[in-house]
Length: 89
Image (spheres, one colour):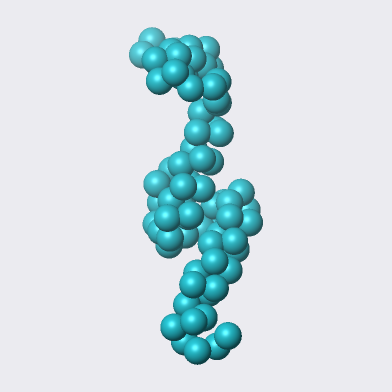
């Protein structure tokens, strides 16, 4: 028997539409919101292992697959910021 309190796909969509409207932002899906959150954490320099834990991933593989390009950009930017201090360039 189905749990009467379980959310259906429509419940999630309806809740997101309501939240987007209340926030006054452009429509966004729950998945895109998760990705934007993860991207923001990565760009803030949060280690990937911590970012992966936020949505409940067991390890960093899923996060690397979907956000790895952002992590690479942040790594490059971090190295560029450190170069003058290290006397490399």
